[in-house]
Image (cartoon, rainbow, N blue to C red; front, side, top):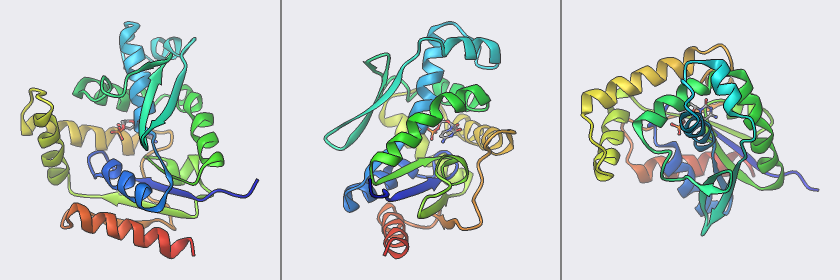
Length: 224
Ligand code: DC
């Protein structure tokens, strides 16, 4: 089998990774894989089983008999928990925080590793997450680190949540963003960080289209 093209996009929550990776994948004809959805699904399952997100043993026990899979409908990724489409249910502030907590557990990362690796070995893909360039796809031809200031990211997330009628305030969203940044970059296992070869793109001062163009250009330049 010929080698697939692997593009890793890592960065903090709310940097716009998913909208940007989705648009770039559509433009280039690659499969887009949002790995955060996998950690969110593990958190949703743990919550349903009554596990405390901070109790590693309870979270690990909740992995028993859990099947997480991804499907693509009209190019859009859907995530399934034991066959149930939970793509919308995982987008709440509670599950965001839960995903951040469960993703620090080595057994959870191990549980999801094979699925991510397998998708990238079978498809040309853009995969977004926190440890894609460092751990999941260290062999990616292109590694992008996409970031923006906490305030800008919180503002974007706040607007998204308002559109979905989720009740919250900007201050709460900003506090969540900062807490998750801290959790994601200070954990012992697979912390969020750029690699030496990462192309750093800061979207604070860029429009969505400018950021998409910067990402597409970086990919084209590095896959010639
Ligand atoms: O990208 P997101 O906000 O949907 O991710 C949810 C959480 O999952 C995030 O707080 C960190 C974790 N995550 C991770 O540890 N590794 C990844 N590759 C993707 C997400």
